[in-house]
Image (cartoon, rainbow, N blue to C red; front, side):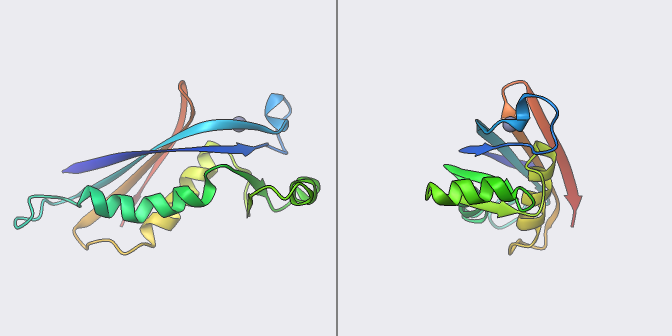
Length: 138
Ligand SMILES: [Zn+2]
């Protein structure tokens, strides 16, 4: 059985390696779906309580909401955003949707999850028309 919950946040970024528009500092209204697969607990009738899902994922999303996410190699942007005193998060990867999926999969899989959960799937949408998705078997 699978259960899923959607999360949303606003975040600015740029892709330093991009040859086109994405090189420019810009923002997205991100949407993420986090899916958990496992057996239904016979006592609770649930795979995982949606409130537990929120407790695990919401702090990760809140950390990024209304910030600029910056690749650690983008030193000029780190310097300029710091000068503006604007909230930012420095990460060891280009902030593509693909890499954000890996970032969340890693963090969620390292959270305290019931042993009945066998698989996590994360889908990150930068726009209404695009997404990246991956899954992790636990
Ligand atoms: Zn973008």
